[in-house]
Each structure stands twice: as structure tokens, then as C-alpha cells.
Length: 130
Picture 1 (cartoon, one colour):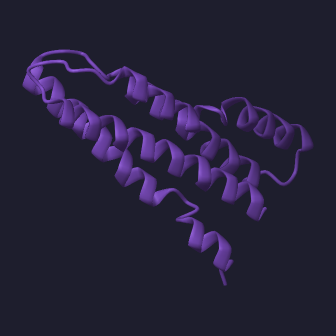
Picture 2 (picture 1 turned 180 degrees about the vertical axis):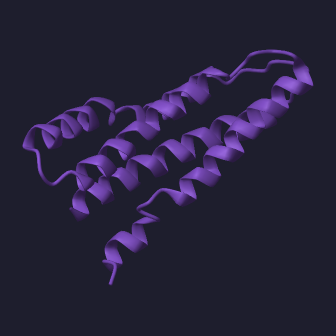
């Protein structure tokens, strides 16, 4: 039976965050198709870096034999953990970039920020449930 606190925090396997990631990447693709500008492509890379702590937490949960492997996963988890909330700082990139509306760019950046925060909470819930 899953712990009610973990279920309330979100899907610990990150399935919900996968959908959010898809929305953000699709918005970047739509923006590129509409404007032929590479604006906000860095958000895709930042989101990839935000996923790494969840991957390392999953691997740390799977390794049971080697303390060295567990330590390596824990160290990499700690190293990449700040990338999840770091996506919030990408809000400073917002500025009018015609021909795309500023409102579309706000939606685009906020989708990445929300996904980054969700991933940060999920990884903390996964590590805390261990």
C-alpha cells in the first residue's frame, strides 16, 4: 500500500512530470516554427538536467549490494539536485521577442518552471520515502 503522503505529493515515478515535459518541449518547437528563432532552447537542456536527480534517486533505490554504487548515486543526486529549482531563474529571460506574443513566452517558460519544481518535489519525496 503506497504511503498517503507520497501519493499526495505526486506521482513518485515521475509519470506526470513526463507529460509536463512534453508540453514544454512542444511549446518550444511551436515557437521555433512560428519565428525561426532559437529563443528558449536552453530550457530544454535545463529541464534535462532537472531530470537527473530523479534518475539517480531511482538508481540509488535499486542498488542494494554495493555501498560504493549507493554513495555514487547519492553524490550525483546531490550534485544535480539544484537544477530543479534553478528553472525558476529562467523567468528573467522573459522579454518581448516578436513575432511571438509575450503571453506565449510566459506560458512556455512557466511550463518549464512548473515541471522543474514538480521534479524537485518528486525527487525529495522519492528520497524521503526510502
